[in-house]
Length: 204
Length: 242
Image (cartoon, rainbow over all chains, first blue to last red; front, side, top):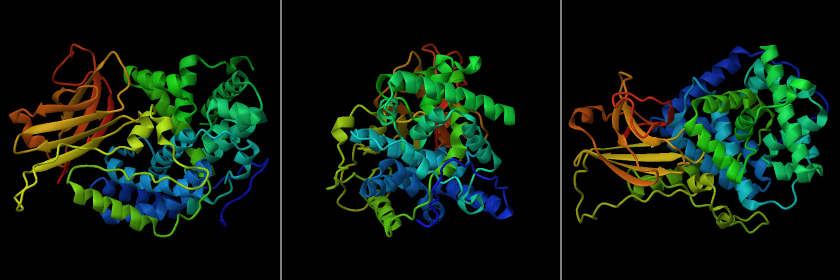
């Protein structure tokens, strides 16, 4: 876990897209398109390029290592079966893969009905905002924008949104973790999302 | 700030994209995804907006040997029956985080996770026989849990289409084939669950090839134009010859 960065109170510096990262994204997209043709070698390539990331997603939300491993295994089976529905015009390959992993992990989490959600602070300590995108298939300057926009929100709103995204918590779970009424948390998140949308459109 | 009140529908689109909704609220949002292209576009826009946040997840090496297990499961799936699709069962864990699938039976996502498609098995032949020409496709889209699996058998010219996880809507699921020329051809209306059997019209059989996509649209009860979809695609998948 040498590349896990703890993060508190700082927003990431901007990482320009490098030729190497552009090439890596193109390679991943090409491999995923070949998986749609049931190319087993391409699946191995996709796995080699993304398993650490998707494992990070699964483990972050599931917390339980064994469960994260099971979920990850099923994520790649889904990728094998569903790669035909990947549309490069709608999402980057890494975003498409991460979405499958996150949904599967949230599904597992909700099936568990954790009685003791983690403190929301933990969502921040594990957010890897300083990871080097040139190595990590990142999403170009939009990435810096959304983190910068999150930084403009009131801390409680940002924390609630991040708890939902990075921990896969539902409204009642976030409310419990933050020790606030569900209505309050809902209002924070809705207002925060609206501000986020405005900020992102302003920066485009 | 005064402008930060979010209209309910926009909020629901964002909440669905973020994965915050559960139960009845989630079902309602999924129903809207099918019924309202504007809402579906809003959800898609939110998914794009939040995609850069995935960079915030750490990279943690996957357990050694996992890829071999995945390949083993794919091999086992292919060996069981060509064209069938089996997602690995999720073993119970001894630790505190054991699987309790029964508690989540209502979830459409869980239904997909645990999905094991059981097609009517062909008669077991005592000697290997030449298999008829078959093609399969899995159709998915932006609606979590909605999964269609289609299997075409050239010996009968029939396509069997299984529908899972279809939310309740006022519209009807309509299946189309889109060959390389990009023009959709209607295959027929599907039942909202279970397996629908469609006899492929003779003129359309030539389109059953790996260059074709199957797409699903949700159409009004009376189809405005049988020659082209009137609603956006909500699930799609490429045909694979097997």
